[in-house]
Image 1 (cartoon, one colour):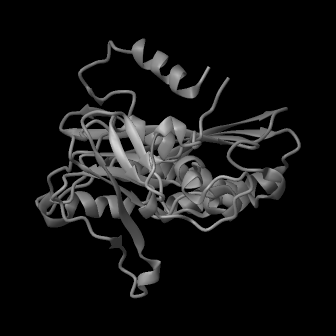
Image 2: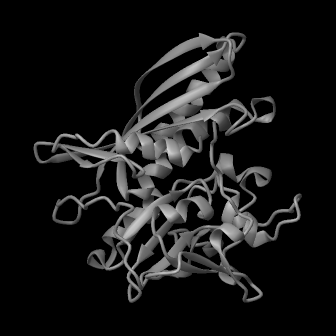
Image 3: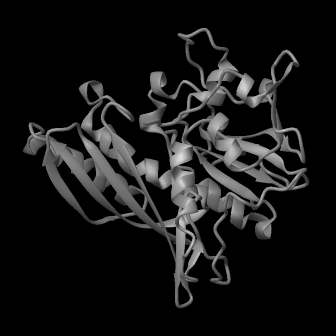
Length: 316
């Protein structure tokens, strides 16, 4: 069974939700209200042999990724990190020193992003290292202390522009999948700048590749591969760089839509060195029919499923 099929089965059987659930299953985070407050919740995991290779990955980077992978979901909702809890299944021969190093890395990373670890659970088992992190977030507030509604996946309209942050592709061979920065501050800027004039209409954490994640935002679109921001890396399977950018996954960038007349900046950052700023690139347009079409650098139009870029998907 494909991951998407399993998720759809879960969603279909989980329709009787209380009114307090304001963002139901199917987004980067769910949300519940209590009184006049809103709490967003997400859970994600990292597994040895799937999201990293423990044999050649420092524990500090494993612990960091366990936290930042979840923080990228918070960024996709344009929300503010609040706290985290972690459940860890440790290999039987993992050892106290390794466990200490791992949990120190998770704790320090969480504190860096103002998302402190407040609890969790551990188990020793005969399997590989598995970490499941649950994060909590709340809406940002504007200058008048009013909550800013999270950005969901469902608001894109025909004519909207499609944007992506950062560079895409070759995440595993370059190590980006371990060292990425969650785009929390960039997302905050988008929803707060100019009185909300740059607010995305829909947004998603780009973790499974455009080929998997864009269809979760829109049904119809045209994408221009010649302007896709590419991460430098060597192809080992004969695919073109733009195909890696579409399908490799593990980018942890933001894929979002915005009104065509919104003035979205070309980069984000406060560092004096502009080379450290994060690129924001318009890569296409939401359309009203025709499915998702990819226009190659040579000008050939292909259906997304013909572009040899399937994206990252778990199967069972």
